[in-house]
Image 1 (tube, helix red, strand yellow):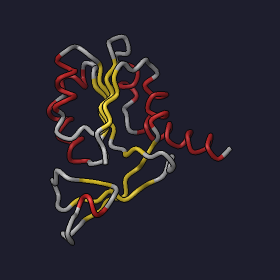
Image 2 (tube, rainbow, N blue to C red):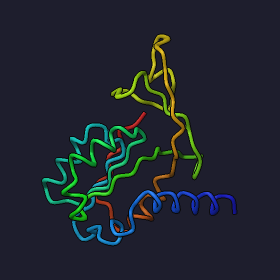
Image 3 (cartoon, rainbow, N blue to C red):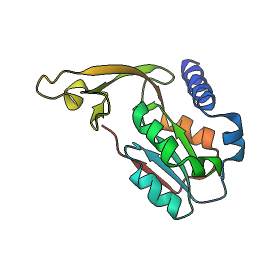
Length: 151
């Protein structure tokens, strides 16, 4: 079916974004927190400090890159997975335009008017998107808390 094909694309995408050794060594026995909308990593940091395993997701690559630096120890310990994808309910395995007013912007959105209000100059990147179900399937562990802080 089309839905099954799309889900397979998302699963393949998420697996391709994660080095195999990170998926294998990821700690699935600790309480699991999924942070959709990583932003500056404050929530991810709080749960890592509590000893939880975390999967953090953000559509904006600069937030992911900063988190890779900030949490390099936790990544190497198998306590954190980071994915640069967006969340979509109907575009499984596809791409959507992510808008932002300038590089390093705090405000990003898949809705242009939210990222760049009042005719602010706007840039966009096409971002891979997946459904939440695909994230849960790749994690393959019970999720205790899932925070969704996205536009």
